[in-house]
Image 1 (tube, rainbow, N blue to C red):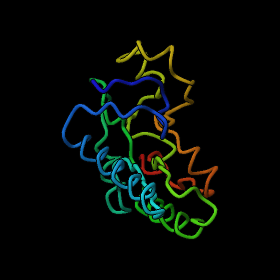
Image 2: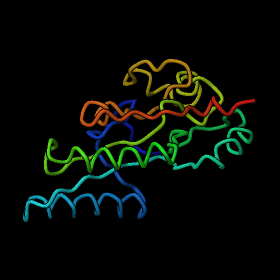
Image 3: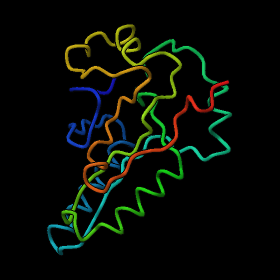
Image 4: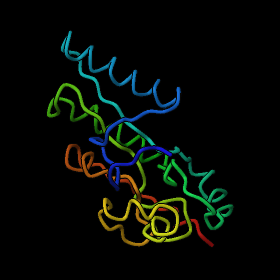
Length: 163
């Protein structure tokens, strides 16, 4: 399991990568930061959850079932339109941002049918002490930094597609 230090995750959470896919993302982030430090190039990294377009969301919502185990992806997702808006805001507000920064991109809810705290209690009770309480089906990933930096927040919820 991914070594989780606290929930909701944010940009400051340690990147304890354990697989080559995660390491390649970490290495890419470090490379961009090197370009910023060495040459003053502006670099902004987004860490999107599973990007879902408008056509995919109803299908995904319809296919959701109660969880049978912990999901290291934390049931994360982000609407494609919201992802595009985050990139637009980063470009428009770049002059007001540090030269290098990282932004988590996730919807305000999960792809789980159960409440988030219920999932932690059932599958990862070891995380209860390091979790800031999450209401309802709230996300396990915080987008507070993107909101505070550029005013971004996602507009769609998976529950909008529940029947």
